[in-house]
Length: 321
Image 1 (cartoon, rainbow, N blue to C red):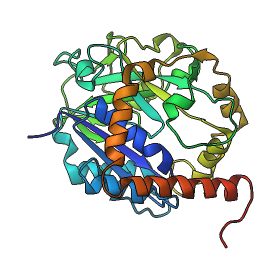
Image 2: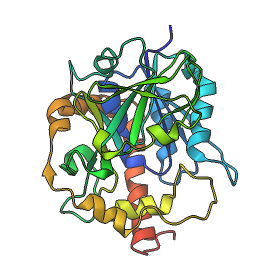
Image 3: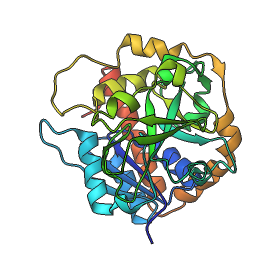
């Protein structure tokens, strides 16, 4: 039997944050979580392998050549290996993105149940969170450490993430939306507040479903919490990792600059809803996962290596010897 709800992700050197991400989305009811990783030096791949050994997720290596797009390559490998086209719904979320369903029991199935058979995509807006009083990364749950967000109508919430109806309806799935519509007529999209809009099948879906105009940013039934910056040193590690959504080796202006940081760091609205709704269940699931043989050790290794990378890359202390 094909899984109903599938989550895919592409990762590189984000080890300390993986366990909470996986636990959260298991609590939300994703039937399968498929993750590909590339060029890891902090133990991300080791932790993913430990989780995969117990069937919690699947993990596959995503070797790259210059010019390859890391994320696109990851999603295509996952799609071919795990036949994700057969799922009812497919979603792509990065490790700093957490789905929030504010209807029913808070499960992903409560969200997709709102979509009639005519809906091709559920298009969700971001709810962007900022930093905290601590400038330094520390182990622990991201959703508990960073609880200040920007206003709902902030332009930072324009980026879209999509739950795409499967069953072969799309030629490919990318980071923000699917590609290559195989249905008939135009594309029917349900936004996070339940309103339905029509997107033309003009071969340029990215012009419609990459960013929402400010007046169409919608939350209501569902959205995704986006923890884009975290602490200053974790943000600098993000700069060091590079952009998974661009070709490997491409020389391009730094997206994650001081202006990007300042934009998110201005967040000042307290919001603990994700903890209030899912916190206890996620804590229980994390404890269950950590009790699996090899997982706690892999988590500790990832935290240790990530901390050393920060000391070396951010603060310039060489611990290689």
